[in-house]
Length: 114
Image (cartoon, rainbow, N blue to C red):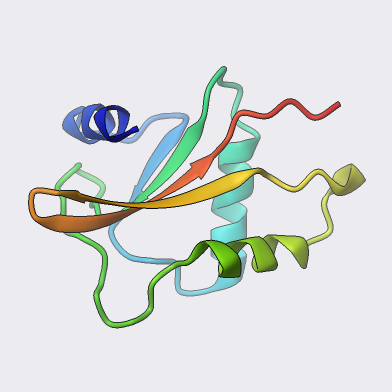
């Protein structure tokens, strides 16, 4: 996955199935909105919210003020949302280091709902 993320950042722009976020969302509604937007993109592959990168693709790193995203909190947040037919997006949170800065990668997996 690191190689994929490095290529997306190196492109210097956002795309239909990846989005750069310099900081974490200020509220949960905005975060859920971005997750749903990515989950609904027509793309045969995973989608990514990349935290710690600005809109121009410059790596800034995620804030180290203790307000980190974590997998358990994200899953709990999504479980509280009413989804059509209970189809909650399948997510995985990763932390990677690039250019000596920590990035948070929220991977929205490409899963078919049956």
